Length: 225
Length: 177
Image (cartoon, rainbow over all chains, first blue to last red; front, side):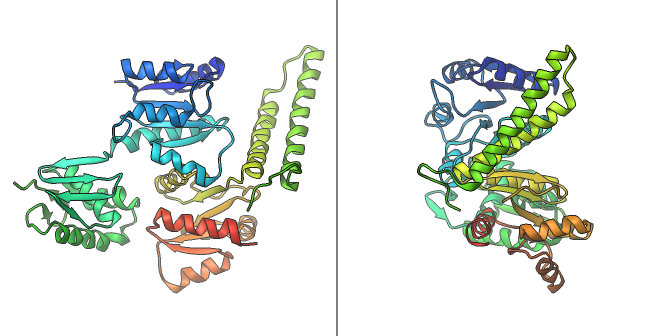
């Protein structure tokens, strides 16, 4: 199965050269030369990832992102924005709110472009923003979890960990994966942090049974009636 | 650092623009010469010039828009890239490396202390000048001393929250000399 990318740039030559770089790396690449065309193509057949020029005559990137989301909580695939001059940090916060996965300055080395495409595809493969599992609901974007109607008070890391576990009910998730995905490190000096996080999750749930310890390996989420 | 407003550009902007123009002019002259002689232009050198022009353009953008460039150096490549991506989403111009490269002017360096022993004298000196934000997995007094040795502007213990790193970057980019 090949990965399909959509390159959006109002300059056809820029779009074609970018597409060719990506094709040589083994991707199937389509091109759109305006925001409107991009949205049409997405409606017909959503890509696995979109590379989006920031400034186009018909639409700027934030507008395209808003349309792609169209009321949903998140865009269904990663979007990397190709920028020229960057804006001051405070302006750019809009980017994350509107759902871009990453940013690349135009003219960046080919290897860097490819690495960021791979990174964005990988990140999206391992996350989901809202998870519902029985009476448990987790909204990562709002950093909040509920058990039934009751909101649970959880810090960021326990919440991420709960999201990871609840996203794969019945699976044992080992410590190494928890460290990597929740703490962003493979450094093993943080094992006690895992236990602390599990303790906080159990306390917030106030009901036994949801999180099972699998001795010597990791933890398993068990959906409770 | 405030970006320049009004009619007169900042000295940094003027200098970066001047160097950008020189590089482009050299590139053009070289191509014109090659065309006049009817020979192929030396692709490798021209690519080098173009790369230099893009680096200069980045300096122009920094001076014009007040963007902050950040280099995240960590031998854990995935962690470094995760951090850099998080910073890019917040509007920083962030890049990750597994080992220290040449530091660009006004670049803020986030440096994993575990790499300190691998530095040669020249890069150690360059790093000290950059007053890096040091990140470390260890909390022993030895690593704090190492950080002080590197003239660190901040010292953060892994795992580092993005918000804490951003606060350190703001302190470094805004306040320090």
